[in-house]
Length: 77
Image (cartoon, rainbow, N blue to C red; front, side, top):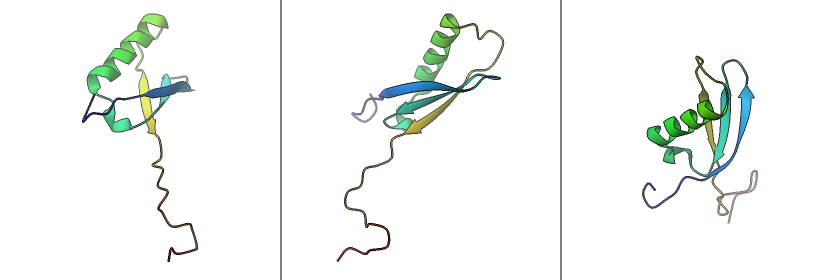
């Protein structure tokens, strides 16, 4: 937990093969710590044969849901 918020990983997909690159869809990407990232990489290495090659992660956070934003083309009055 960072600042009272918890990282949620919604899903993970493999984007590239050589080197293996994974895209993690999370709630807020700034909540991923280096220690947790290393833990996830080590778990992938134990489960799948990724010996000798780098494993890359890309984090994609949710877009903020701003209901008070102006609709495009029409100003709020």
